[in-house]
Amino acid sequence: MTIGFVSDAVMDVMLQYVKDNGDMLNICNNLPTTYAEATSTYMLAQGALTGADYTLAAGDTSGRKVTVAAQTGLVVGVKGLTSVAAITDSGGSALLIYAPCDNITIYIGNTVNTTAFDWEIQDAT
Image (cartoon, rainbow, N blue to C red; front, top):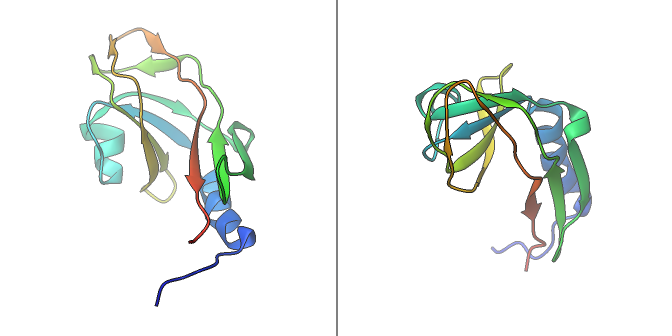
């Protein structure tokens, strides 16, 4: 059976979970598939997130989305080429979501800034 409809309220529960639990933004040099990869193996820079960094809204094309505000001053701990921004839950040791980011080389001792990005859940078709 193919789902033909998902209520906005159901999508909002998923997005709210990220807002309530995603407390770290990790800039990585490779695509993480686990919490350990996002926070250690591939992590170049990291910064804290709070609920105020997230906005839930209607999706750009359909459904719902959560937007993560631009971040400034993330401390670079490892030199490397950025490729992914991953949101993790440090309390639950979980990788929640990730998104590709611009490929730039960052250096130890510097800071890195991000632009706002979003995760959109489109309506079922």
